[in-house]
Each structure stands twice: as structure tokens, then as C-alpha cells.
Image (cartoon, rainbow, N blue to C red; front, side, top):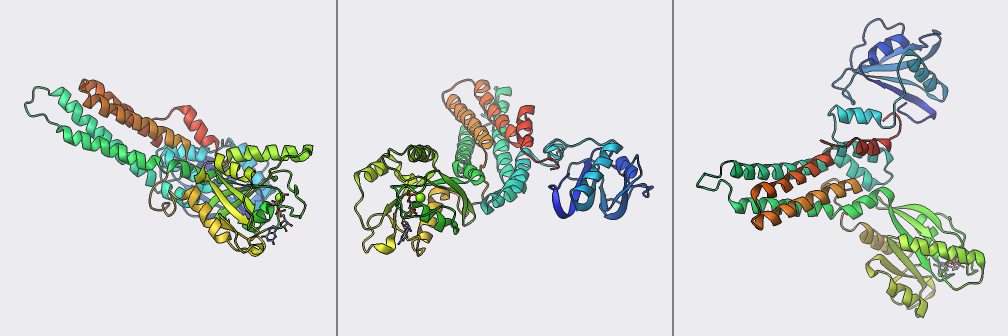
Length: 438
Ligand SMILES: Nc1nc2c(ncn2[C@@H]2O[C@H](COP(=O)(O)OP(=O)(O)OP(=O)(O)O)[C@@H](O)[C@H]2O)c(=O)[nH]1
Ligand SMILES: [Mg+2]
């Protein structure tokens, strides 16, 4: 089943494999010959054993290898809802099909060379992504943006290796066939390009989960009001009673298409109240995990010792001081003045958060490839350390044969990234995240 269950105009059931066409013929008794490829036909679908009419559906046949999976594929667009698609699926199973595993269609496409592993992951991001920024990165990656870069790096490394091996095989040549300068330049260029890709990894990976932004400060500082103002809805309870928020509240927020997870927390103070104390513990755990902390202090009053200490113990580049209730103060003091009541200062705060969380990659997606998964970063780091090890042993005068093995190591790390040689458990991990039917 390629579409989610539930009420809808149409649902799509797909079959892939060498028996796709015979199975179709079994559930469409009015069809006596293969239908013309890649054309839709309206056909009656019957149960192969009982003969019961189940639906009238649009059916198309995609012969391999020109299909998504590279195999013969049949698509049946039934009426939507719960029953029609399920009964058509049951009919196909009765005719001899078996249910697909999660991600099996894309896995087969990958195994049949229709896309590489980076593209397969991009398909997953396109389906699961909730932010425009991740969508742009996924579309770019599906068009082989990252794959192209990785292939270029790999071929530079393999070419360099070939030059060295040539030198090893024909040592008696007077003229050294490989100018050392050329090797040095090529490998240093590879290092620089790997570093540029790796530099996008921390922010690229945030595109998937969203950057965790935690609102913190004393009770009554206006955290919940700011939370609501940023979200544009009255999610959190706001009162003039200090200690109103007890539990942490989390919500998704998009700033110019970049994903954030915004968290409102209990005000920080010494308390004898057991419930409030637990809430403050929860707040501290969020603070430890936060990408960014927005520290709220009312405008127009000097910061207290507790507040100064908080600010001093946190990394400055990941902490934003805002002065809340700015509509009530003439001189707000250090920090970004905001008024949740009037909405003033919110555009400035949004833009500071956007730059702090995604500054390194803003404007990049669509043009430059991004590293969006830990798997990619790991492979790139492995390739980088092999290339660095090569340079070191080569310049240190170690035997060529020995130095060259590092280049082989770097090339295979990149091949694994593309999925050219990939252990089964990696494949299981990648495709296990897919929904059934993709
Ligand atoms: N005038 C004005 N009042 C505000 C503003 N923001 C919050 N307040 C008031 O300040 C009081 C406290 O606001 P909350 O948002 O509940 O503060 P909090 O930091 O979440 O408080 P706790 O949950 O107790 O930690 C409420 O009476 C709000 O109406 C603002 O921008 N302007
Ligand atoms: Mg609150």
C-alpha cells in the first residue's frame, strides 16, 4: 500500500517483481493480454478465488528496467477509504503476492542501480521532512547534488592512487612519472573539500529534528507569553502568579522554513514546592540538551546575581538574552527587548535564533550539498583521516606501497557512503526507517 490508510479520494496499491503482470491478470479477469506500458486503464478488480467484484480501478503497468524499482511494476489506483484498497491488496495477496517490508520498493530500486544510497535517504527525507529547508536539501540530494561531489572526491583519490601505483610498478623509469607537487595539491584539495562538506554537518543534521530552543528565566519573567507569541497561539497558560508553568511544553516552530523545537519551562528559583521542584529539574535537563537558550529577564531592571551566574556559566554563542515586557520599560537594558503583548522585538529575536542555529547553511540548500546525516559525517571523517594519514606517510618518506593503502581506505569510505559497497546492516538501518509501500 503506497498511500496511508483512511478517508481519501484514491489509494495506491503497488506490486513489484517478475510476477507483477501475471498477478494483475489474475485479479483483472477482463484483461486477456498485457496492457500497454505506462498507460492507465480503468479495469474491474475481482478476487481471484471468489470472483467477487471489489472495485473499478485505474491500472498501469511499468515494465522493468524503466520503472522505479527497475523491475516489472503494477500500480492499482483504487477508490480511497479503508475497505476498497485493503480488499484489492487482499486479492493480490490471494493471487500470490507477498506484503512489502518497510522501504522495500526503494531498497529494490537501490539494489537494481536506479538510485544510490544518498538518493534513497533523500527520498526518505522528502517524505518525512516537515521543514522547507530539509525539503530543499532532499530535492537537491535526489538530483545527486551530494552524490556528485562524493564521486568527484572519490575519482580524484583513485586517480592519485593510480599515479602512485604507476610509479611503484615502473621504478626504473628515469623521469619520475608523478610530479610530487601534483600529488600534494590533489590530496590537499581533497582534504579542503571534505572539510567544507563536514562543516555543514552539525547544522545539516539539525534540519531533520529541528534546533532545540529552550526558554528559561525566573518565574513570571514572561517565558510562557513569549512562547505563545512566537508560536502565534495560546498554547501555554499565562497568569500573573509566579510559578504558573510546571511542566515543560514543547512545540514545533518554523523560522523562514528552518525547523525549531521551542520549549517553555518552569521558572528557575529555589522552592519548597515538590511539584514545582520537579518542574525545575525538567527545565534543567532541557537546558543541558538545548541547542540555544533564550534567557528571559524583565526589561528595565538590573540583572540579579542568579541571572548573571546563569549567563556566565552558559556558552555565550548559544545563549540569547531577551528583555521581556519591554512595553513597560523605558530603558530595557542589555539584551533584545521584546514585548509578547505587542509583538515588538519578535522579528529581531527570530532572526537571531535563525542565524545562531543555521547561520552556516542559510541560503545554501538548493545550491550546495549538505551533510544531513550522522552516517555521512562518519564516512567523510573516515575518508579524511585516511587522506591525512596518506599525506603524512608519503611526506614522511614511507614506502609508496604503504602510503597508497591509505588512499584505498579513503576511496572505500566514500564508496560506502554512496552505497557502492555497503554492509547489509547499514542497508537495514537506512531502509528500515521507510514506511511500507515506499
Ligand atoms: N505588559 C506586558 N505583560 C506581559 C508581557 N509578557 C508577559 N506579561 C505578563 O507577565 C506575567 C507573567 O507572564 P508569564 O508568561 O506567565 O511568565 P512566565 O515566565 O511563564 O512565568 P512562570 O510560568 O511562572 O515561570 C503575566 O501576567 C503576563 O500577562 C508583555 O510583553 N507585556
Ligand atoms: Mg510560564
